[in-house]
Image 1: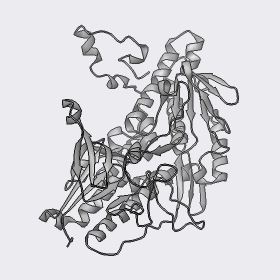
Image 2 (image 1 turned 180 degrees about the vertical axis):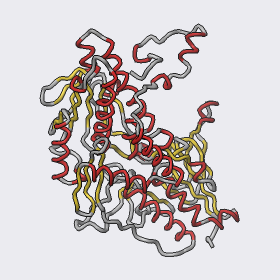
Image 3 (image 1 turned 120 degrees about the vertical axis):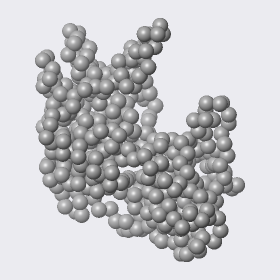
Length: 459
């Protein structure tokens, strides 16, 4: 039995937010039924995105609707509020929340009271003040961005196939990815694989006509899989005619020209930015303690350090790694820790409500897997290194076991099976991004004034 009625507010619907709420509704099922506990989840989107599947969604191997998990279906005993928390005053335990309704009627944010706070807003792309980046850069953190990038790449192939201008053709077929972490390498590998396959259906395009460039500011890529597998990945990508530029930075992309620190210039219509993330801006709008890097300072029990009734985990939380040999080490901000932290976090909230001692989060990093395209990958698991098909197969097997709900597992497995039996889909559906454009033009509306607003595509 809980000691008193508790209102639990979960901020964020990602890995930590969804799994914590799911754990709480399972552990507090009786209390929820008696009305002793109330769980509210505030999230900008009504679904959780399984981000490791974004590269395969971009390549067309998985349908975008199977990369997301509907929160209302999974969290059927929680109140799911689609909106954003703009600030938190933990001293009085209130959160300012804006929703679609407040935006529609122009009212101010609503104040939502709580007894226990779970902060799991995640992270946002860490953009630098590079000229042209805000205007021409493409992110890769959401399913919308992944599908938009797929449409964009195929559209560039359409442009290159239909123009006689060599400068336009060269810019359309040059694809620059900035950032050599998981997101950048996997997105590049999957999309290059998809584009190379798609080129066979264009009478005047060859895979050799396309220029794929990976820009990394450090001297290695995929540091999570170890130096040897990182070097193998560089060799494998270069064997596929992909330029891997290490110790190189993007200095400008103004006027659709990527200017690098080594002096190289690449006219390009595609610049994908995957150079790291930073804590969600909400963290700075709270009265809770933060580290120098802007993350919430937490304990190994996943409480916010020095603060009662406040909990945090995931990308926005600096959680001590009690398994590390070096003191002061923090857990890495990745899905492997987030899912496990959510389990302990949910259990500790229940223990706190019942007056029981809290558990310490301890998980030794087991390794990493990465896909480099169809039947290609690298992995380091329990100290063993794999590459090629075995690593790719382990990548799929691991993430199939981790994607939430049996429903999603079955659908993803079915799609993989069908993809192995039939040919890839090579259709661009960029018009989905502007679904009313055709009707607006037919009804006498003004056509787009800027080429970037073209209703037929994302370019």
